Length: 370
Ligand SMILES: NC(=O)c1ccc[n+]([C@@H]2O[C@H](COP(=O)([O-])OP(=O)(O)OC[C@H]3O[C@@H](n4cnc5c(N)ncnc54)[C@H](O)[C@@H]3O)[C@@H](O)[C@H]2O)c1
Ligand SMILES: [Zn+2]
Ligand SMILES: [Zn+2]
Image 1 (cartoon, rainbow, N blue to C red):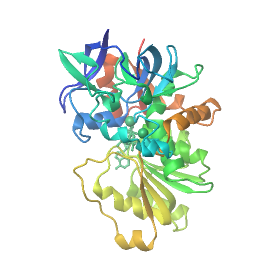
Image 2 (tube, rainbow, N blue to C red):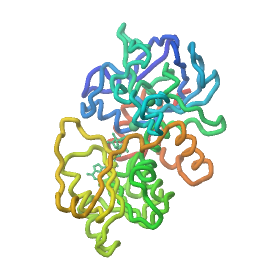
Image 3 (tube, protein in one colour):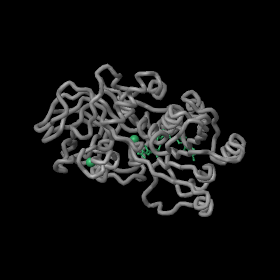
Image 4 (cartoon, helix red, strand yellow):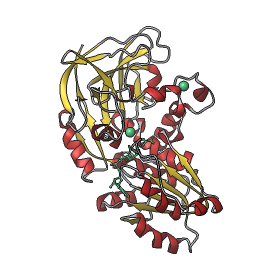
């Protein structure tokens, strides 16, 4: 069938919205009509070359929609089901999935290749060329063919447009605080970079019972939004956070720190660790360019301060368990999603959406489809 999608043909070029030809779903696959797709910063890392990505590729990995067609052998989904697409599939039977760590599913290793799990043969074509799909999803498209392992069925009465955000950013940020940093009641938490992911970490910290949440972001609008979502204090830089956190904690420093800035570089680790108290935990969430092999820390501070540094992929969440759980928090008014979406765009305006994101004019932009 004919559809349309935003394609990255080469790095450092804009998204190109074009007509595409979409194959029928094959073994274990479904075709989903997209309702919405969030504009996550990671897609821009592919544009800038900070995240090695197979090309040409359809962007987008934060989507939700309705199953329209079901391929042979699909067991969990049927036509009409509402689904959120998870940016890492969960096969259910690799060592990691089987032990409750499906965010580490072996399929995660090939998501940036963007070719179907089953046969690595492109399902979408434009200009006579096979296209890859970001995270094996490619949600900057009116329709996608994806594996059922990438789909999480959700209740029909949930707003499908907002649910898209839970396919990556909200889950990654919420889980950064709740699952990886393990925020506890009474904690002081510092969140560095409060865009879509970081502001969800702020919310996760609030829900987990943090007493003090310091948002760090150079953009004033993002600091204001972080305060509306639960931050108790906001400053423009980690340097500015040092005296504030020292004063707030009487020199103890933060129990938990979370790095969710646009891009992490090696020089950002030392200030993060100095903001973290002895015995505390720092959760690294931002993407880093894989060519960066070194980061600075004061070794004795980390060693004798007995500090922990933990990584984070997809918030340490199991999509089939945690996506419905996070949406349930939304349903009960505990987690805010409406407030995260500043602006919606048609697919044709995806580049304007990223311009707004990169210039700090929006929290999360959402592509919406008719
Ligand atoms: N680990 C994962 O599984 C995972 C998943 C999704 C996104 N990410 C990554 O998380 C990061 C955040 O994504 P996002 O969509 O929220 O981006 P975003 O653009 O919405 O937000 C990033 C924020 O960081 C701020 N910032 C930039 N430099 C800063 C600095 N030095 N100090 C403090 N704040 C700074 C920006 O002003 C912005 O508000 C990106 O690197 C993205 O690729 C990781
Ligand atoms: Zn993302
Ligand atoms: Zn698996």
